[in-house]
Amino acid sequence: LDYLNKALDDAEQNNQYTLLREIYQHLAVAYERLGKFDKAYSNYVLFNQVDDSLKNQSHFNEIQEISTKHKVEKSQEHIEKTKLELDNKKAEIKRRNLIIYFIVAGLLAALIFAFVLFRLAMHRQKANNQLIHQNEEILRSQKIIKKINKALTENEEKLRSIFDVSPFYLLLCCNSFY
Image 1: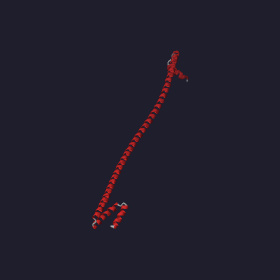
Image 2 (image 1 turned 60 degrees about the horizontal axis):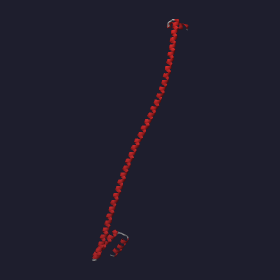
Image 3 (image 1 turned 90 degrees about the vertical axis):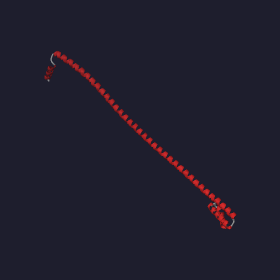
Image 4 (image 1 turned 135 degrees about the horizontal axis):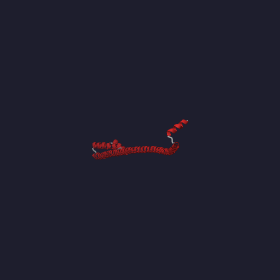
């Protein structure tokens, strides 16, 4: 009993509840064998109190552990959900960027096409202006040729009337001079 009482003092000072439970149990058994049923009963009650406290603490720890696990799982689910949302947003941003790139490329191609069409129109306008100028030159030349032709025809008629000779005869005569 002396050793158990010493062990009881040490266990109480060091807050070793598991050891306290065993000591109270051994004291209850020892006092019962000695026939000191009052002390056996009080140690048995103390044993039950410490045992209940240890069980409660164990249950509390289990509940805390389950609660912590639940919180961790919830946090993990939230993290995974957030990560999934982030991945979805990244995919959406990629898709939008791709659409923007296609739009920019399309606009750039349309701009290049418009520039080419503008250059062709300018070239065509220049060619048309050149053709108009050439046409005007041809018309002026035609007017001059008509005037010359008219003048020659008038001169030929005057010459015929003067010489009353056919034009073929004149040609023969003119060729004989040379």
